[in-house]
Each structure stands twice: as structure tokens, then as C-alpha cells.
Amino acid sequence: MSFLRNAWYVAGWSGDLGPAPRRIRVLGEWIALFRLADGTAAAIGDRCPHRFASLGDGKLVGDSLQCPYHGLRFDRDGRCVHNPHGDGSVPAGGGVRSYPLVERHGALWVWTGDRGRADPAAIPDFARFDDPALAVSRGHLKVTAPYELVTDNLLDLSHAAFIHPFLASPDAADRTRTGVRQEDNTVWSQLWIDREPITPLFRLVWDHPDDQAEMRSHMRWTAPSTLYLDVGMTPDGAAPDDSPALPSAHLLTPETEGSTHYFWMVGRNRGQADAALGERIHAGIARAFAEEDEPMIARVAENMDGADFWSLRPMILAGDAAAVRARRILAQMIRAEGAAPDAPAAARIPAIEGAQHGHHRN
Image 1 (cartoon, rainbow, N blue to C red):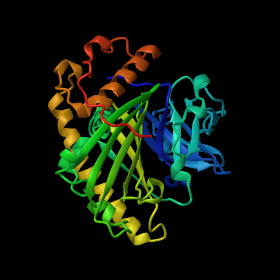
Image 2 (cartoon, rainbow, N blue to C red; image 1 turned 180 degrees about the vertical axis):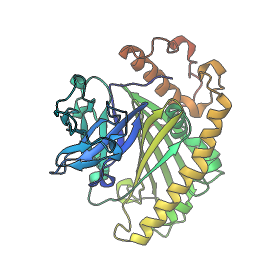
Image 3 (tube, rainbow, N blue to C red; image 1 turned 135 degrees about the horizontal axis):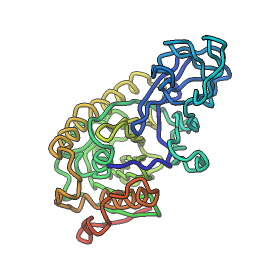
């Protein structure tokens, strides 16, 4: 397992970073997050170079972060700007790393690679969640599994019928069409279900007399690990853009090789001012992720016991086509970056010619 370091990863939600600093582990590195007096967010290495205490457990003094152990202070660039001991001089090498940080779409995006390549334009587009016409709820959970397994799960839209009764019905196989498409380093996994009974989740926002509709679930994966799900139910004769929709974002940040931060947000275009409705939707989505997805993925990781995914020769089904493409793209990008000289060669990854590409719509 290796990481793509020249990429933007979510380190938290903007609304969760207030006056008190926080810490999070990203790609194996502990990072301290804090806000300057003007509200600007900053990210620096969490480990104090003196006795290795956590700067994220410290406090703000002006625009500097003070170590809770011996009072050294560090600015947003990671420089030690105050030493309360001795003559106050700062020993050589007395700083910590700083990380480029951008706030966008309600999230704190950090760059863990070469600073010179940290282009904010490369942050994936989740502008739909900035639309004031959409009510948005945000959450986070820890998954005890590598991030690639979480990506596999999200791109495999067929699993919802088996473990998510709140989100999908179990008997839609004969009414389901699927599609896979790729645009550069972005992969779409698409699913349509005809005459789908209104699911328990959509029943919360349904405002039409029909008790069936066409359901669409289109998952977009952007390397290395951010996904957007366009999901909605459209009554017969209605336009998708005018029908109930519950789009969601799934922002995966590797914590370590065996654990993943799963940041998610879900929006709704019905009942936007209804706080109780928002709480019910949030609770249902959170339960599906924490009580259905997470235990399943964690057990998969346990059964793999640290083995390379392809070395186990997994059976490839039609629903795996998008995930296989994503794994190919990610492996190639990591190799190109030079971070994983031992990454599996493309020839070791099975072809997916037998996968069902199905019906495509734009």
C-alpha cells in the first residue's frame, strides 16, 4: 500500500475548526490545524521538535501555536518564533513542516506533497454543495481499512441492495441498467433502476403521488480518493433536475496504511428549512455508513490480513468495472510519482472486458 502525496486531502470540516487547535493524522503524518486571528486556517507538523509533544494539544497566542509542554511557539510557516528558555535563541532545525491549506466547499484541504505543485485548481469540484438552494449535512467516521477498499465499496453500486435497506430495495436486479465511463483520471460508475419503489430514504423527501420512479445513482471518482454521488428519483414524465435528489460527497483521507478518515456530506433539495427532517436524513445516512459499510469493509481488510489486493486473485464481477479502473489509474499515478517502486504492474491487474457497460446517459 502506498499513497499519492501530490494531492489534496480533506483534513476536517471548516465548521469544526474554531478557536482551539486540532490534530489529525493524514498519510501517516500528524498535522496540527489552527486559525489565525483573522480566521485564516493553517496547518503545520504536529510534533514539536523539542520533546515531540503535540502542538495540536497546545493553545493559540496571537497567530502562533504554543506547545503545551515547554511553551515554544510556531507560526503558520512552521517557524519557531518564541523560545521562553535561556537567551531565547532558537536552535538550528527548530521548525516544523508547514502544509498548504485551502478552505473550499466547507472543507479543509491539505497538500502533503511538493509545495511547488500545490495548485488549488486541482481540488475536485464539489460546488453543488455550495448552492444555497441545497440543505447540507456533514459527518465523519473512521474506517479500519485501507482507503482503496472504501473506494471499491463506493464505486460498487450493487452492494446497496444487500446491506443498505434504508437506501435501496433488494429485488431490483431485473430492472437495473449499469454503465461505466472514464474521463482522464476520473471514473463514473452509473446505475439506473426502472420502476423502483420509493426507498425509505427518499420517502422522507418524496412530494409526488407516484409510488414508483426511475432511480439514478451516478458515482464519480476523482483520484486519489474523492467521490461524488448524484442520486435522485424521478417520477414518470418529470425532469431529473426538478425531482427529489440527495447528492452526497465521500471524501476519503488515508490516516495510515490500515485506516481511513471518511468525511461525507449529503444535500437535499426538499424540506431545506426543516431541521427535524435534516436530522432524520443525517442519522439514517450516518447509520448506514457506521453500522453497515464500516463493519463490512473492516472485515474484508481483516480477511485480507495485509496481503496485496491483486495477489489474492479476486473474482471480478460486472459491478467491479469502475473500481478496477480506479485502481489502475491510482497505481499508475503513484508509480509516476515515484512513491511506490514496488506497486503492482498493470499486467497483474485483470482486464474487465466482460463487465457490463450497459446504458449510458449524460
